[in-house]
Image (tube, rainbow, N blue to C red; front, top):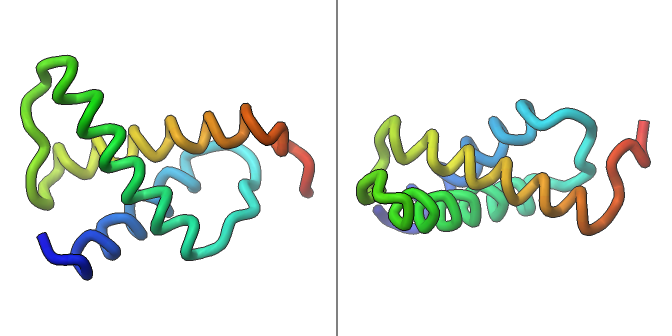
Length: 88
C-alpha cells in the first residue's frame, strides 16, 4: 500500500475507534490519522503474535485489527494522561 492509502486507512480506522471509545478524546485530525496507523501496526503485531495470520493490504480483517489496535492505543492514552472526562 502506498503512503496515501495508509493515511486514508489510518484516518478511517482512527475515526471509527474514536467513535467507539466512550468519552471525548480531544485530539485533532492529524492525531486521529496517527492513531489509526499506529493501531494498524500494534494490532498487526498482536494478531501475528497470537497466530491469527498475517495482516496485509486493505481488507476487512486488516480494518478490524487496525481499529482494535487503535482502541488499545486510545485506552493507553487515557490511562496515562488521566484525561478521561476532563472535558465536557
